[in-house]
Image 1 (cartoon, rainbow, N blue to C red):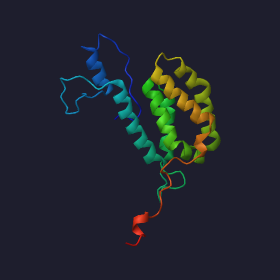
Image 2: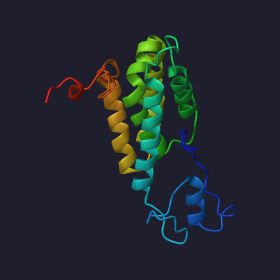
Image 3: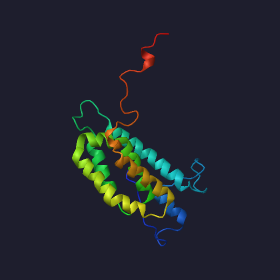
Image 4: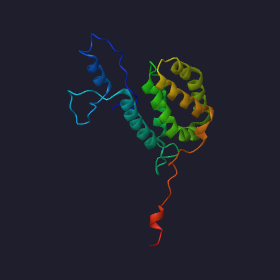
Length: 176
């Protein structure tokens, strides 16, 4: 339910406590056993967990599946990117999600959409990244720098690690 990270503007009159606000945002109990009374996970853990969901989603969308046609599921990745870039305000969670999504699905997006994808990345570079850099959050700045480096180095031309899986693994052809 959190593939496009949710962000609710904090309004003290809508929540009984700051902790209730974070629960609405998707934060889980820190102890991991579902104890709703304990402290919530910190932002680093939350962002890491959300990045895992986004990475898994991006991996599913960029796979070439037989019978899906030339575009497969990548059109859903394009739609995700559009939703993400139109989602304001820009926060650390959005920056990190965009970074991991592009690192996983950027290669396939570039293969299918070429010029449109590169125009989208130019928009990210010229409009989105400056907004990200203005945040007063060291972790957001780090993710922004990684995203800018990914785009500037044109890493989307390189297949991500693990994308091209072998047809069979070595263990099935190795004699004992």
